[in-house]
Amino acid sequence: MANMTKGQKLFTNTSYKHEYKVGDLVGVIIGKIETVNIELKVLACKILSIELVAEDTNAYQLCTKACIISSRFQAFDLLNLCNCNFVDLLTVDPTHLPQLTFNEACKNVS
Image 1 (tube, helix red, strand yellow):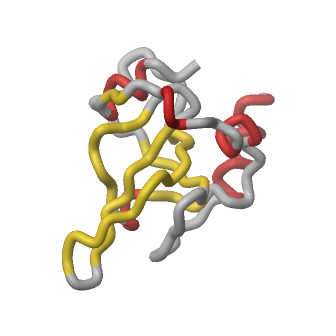
Image 2 (cartoon, helix red, strand yellow):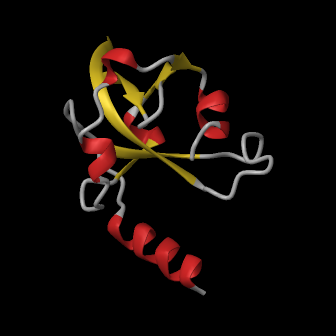
């Protein structure tokens, strides 16, 4: 029951947004392929950098508290988690984090 309440609170505090800035907290929905033995449905991340890839399209590089994700994401892939309290993610120093694929990052979440 506590997990359901926590999940509902996370869902109500999230929203889709079209523009983000470096340092924003976002979530990436973990798809069925990546969810083998994983309880999480959203991977909490912080935006490290933004790259313009097309006229009105940005690509976002993300990190978790344990790694930098090697792939880039677009705004429609992300959930706004700025209203959530992830202090450990806000204060993470990405300079010494390893770079992993999205699937590896999902499996290494603690």
